[in-house]
Length: 448
Image (cartoon, rainbow, N blue to C red; front, side, top):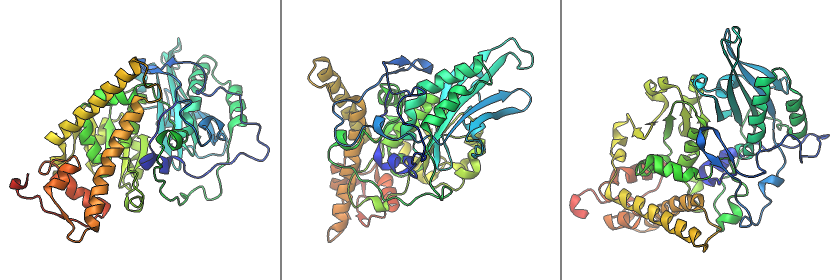
């Protein structure tokens, strides 16, 4: 149950400040039951999760060997009189303001279970929610709790999904018994370095040639097997629209009613569309941040962000147009910015890319069925497909920028897999966002 991740928009933010084990910390092995071991299992919403990634991931140490970095563990409950509240946490002095809303999505009372990824300051969180009917007038017939953890890196949170699912059930059945959580925190805790209120300066990490060796051991987030496949099936050709907005580092907000766990995966998949691996480009790329689940308590924070991908269950966000550039409601992708409207239209080049993506998926499925390819998976294919597309675009743009006349023609656009007319607006925005100095000469329809 390990996520294959993307390095360009995600690793840069996911890793955050390094966390070291306390001087007298116990050995990081065992204890508490992370979610990385064992066989496949069912997740809320009918998704099937299974461990993956194995012999092909050579090189750097596997994530299972990384030190634990849990900086907080907490229990959130819904009180019928006072609403969401943190009922217990370790360490007791940690700032968990807002976590009571992040770890129990708005509308969760309508579902039995869920899981939520979110961001809290410089940390990322994972919480498992459960709702159990009870014969109690005080609790109005339902007991709802979430058990969650915080870490400076979301890439390690997947280990503890199964543990959190078990613990939230334990808290529902035996409220107030925290011994398992105390032992878990004592075993897994890390400490934030000094200056935890400010982000550390990190250089952009560029892609290295071997994707299996250098990419996946460090980049993992739990998701059901077939997450990318579900993403493609859900959005269809619209993924090409999302691809353009993600590459332009727009503020993308995805709305969906609960459960929100699967929607957090869509945030991840959307970020995967924007990988660029060309050395020398990183310094000019605006930072893109996966915020995962957000709610009204995050409005003040979102007002200051210039680029992010997030999801929410709160419909009120649709009215707050100053907070986002792109709003995704079900399969409906829309923007209120007039200059971005042309990007919503699927053109012939988009249809061709979507056809090629599906052709490659079919070829992969066939090779797996006949036993010729056991090392690749659909996640590899999806990430590499868009990374190679992005590389081709930026390689061409940089070559034209370095040429004497700096002229970008319709032939260049076609060579990049773009529609000279349909993608003209996209190209103009791309040049502006990435600060690439070329002259577009594909205004006249006769050029196409």
